[in-house]
Image (cartoon, rainbow, N blue to C red; front, side, top):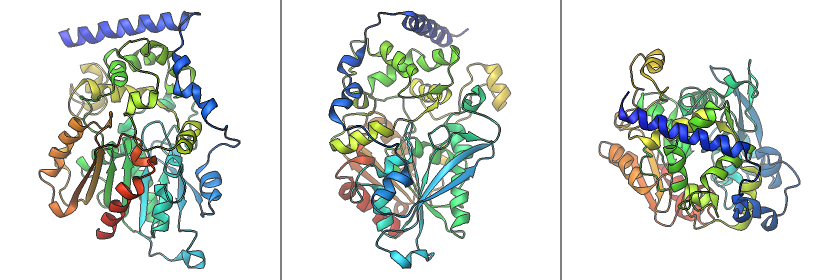
Length: 421
């Protein structure tokens, strides 16, 4: 056994022992005395209805909204929403001149995150008002995409996936559906965070290129080994997701009891500041208003799989972008016919694909060193006419989606980019 695997095993044992103590302790100290999440009840009015992209967000401002469903090759039945035109279009809304745009959300949120502000602030509304046919993806496991042809979310097998499967199944299913529904129009793609990783993975394997007109990457993540989030790095280093998987957990609900136990464990570390959990994970956002933050916390946290968190943790512990590591040569040979998981070779992404990348100086997940590594990989070979990079020094991870000044700083140059491509 190598030293590396011995260290991993020892960290796993330590993590498992601590978790066993936490789950059995009746007097565990709660970090919630200082929690922003706990304090939300004092800062925000309770929501009197569940958030829904069509029924609450779009309808509240009079926008037309449609519900569609897409079934992936591996049986997941996914929700796809559509705002086909702006409220100002009226009877002239049914023409096919609008270019389709697909918005793909990040980790542990869903598509409502694109509409949490007013029509002047929210990207989904801005695109509809700007003349686009706007589609919103919801990945497997989120509130509106929990159906399957043969499995229930109560079945462990339902949660047997990582972002590998999002790239291989969810993303192609969404793009193909929009392409077909709009009469064979190629699709502008906008991804945030995890939504950028999966399109990069697909492009690196020369996939989906016939469906995509251009790609916008908000807070692109690929290389994660230098993340600035101490909380995220500690969770990865002590193999926390692996320990929960070993204990039999398969679904990770950000507002469920498993998360509470994880935070009891991690927030006891004096190096970890859990006063504002969102900033501790994603960086100190500069430009969020109270109403948007309240809407986010009342709706946005969505489930993902423990296995997906294991995959993300693997990326933090090692350099490169690889498929999920099953932890042994035998299992990797079984799945990949090679001892280590295959690399996604991002340098092989075709140079002609129009790409707009924007990142922030305060982002802990898409941190500057890792993002610059990605940019060096892409920009060095890419056609200069088809690559634009926008750096926003004050922005952290959420500012790009719900920042009050994002329409001026980010969305306007993004729309200009679409119009040129």
